Length: 411
Ligand SMILES: [Zn+2]
Image: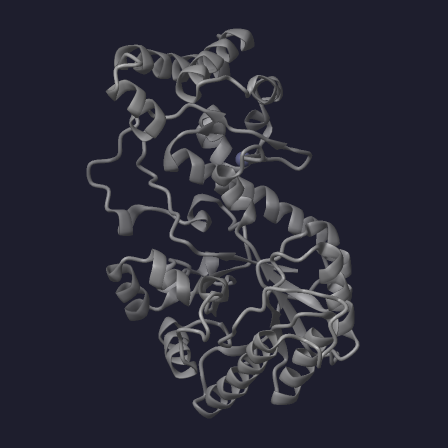
């Protein structure tokens, strides 16, 4: 099973000083900031995914121009020997335009984009169907669903014809969209007729696991032995064995990374459990606290002192020179101040008792110590996301057979 990490330009600054909270004076973001594969001796994925929609939304104009000028491998800095095994896949990011009647990109547009980026794999233009109903058969579905599937198949036909005719540098990957097990199977059958041997299954992110398995089982009845499947945006590691039985060879997901700073509880992952990260917000970055200071409810000096005390005590605790109860009390005092009430007592105690960062062998935890479990600023939060990727990828590798051959990319 191959894991692709979708790029969102969430890089980290290697010059960041976690004690002084300052950056190197010569730091140039585009030159010096690092991707996850640059922070670990071994990259925590098998490839990266670049979405056309993310490039439009998250990249600066300069970044977009650099990507198109240099190509994805040089832009992502995976063109050296150590990282040459990483694949780059391109897609359109259909979730971002799910509310529009038709995709904002044409087939020609997208082929040109993939060519200029020099991707290894390119996913055809698709339009996501955000409804799943096992009882709906092929003919009884609402018109909008049928139209979206038809459009996706029309685009796929045009896409593979043009990529073959133009001898594209990338392997074309078709997209199957559906609203029921039968309709997914119909899409896959049609895509295989067009000549696709690698098919991405879309629209499954919001689906229940049981529905995903039912749809894959239906797809399996029409799947040719040589056809490989990719799951767009789906993780569900616990079902890997079943996924493989159904022909799935790859998937992509940002969830392990994003949970580091988007989840309320599951911020720091280990093989056995997830922990909450210890919130020590920067006064300047916390709107509620800043408002209370400006309105005179809280004195800036006392907030600042609490913030600094928390950081100092946490560092001392990591060195073994401070007690758990002193640190916990101070964190609760600060939470009371910035959030109005302290609610994390039990979950914070658990992290401090277990000290999971001290047992983690990853390059991030070894370099950062306790800073990796502090919910504070992008430099810490993203590095915790990188650590999660490392843990996640290790799990993927464990669950994947050692004899598995890498994906063969057609010339
Ligand atoms: Zn780690």
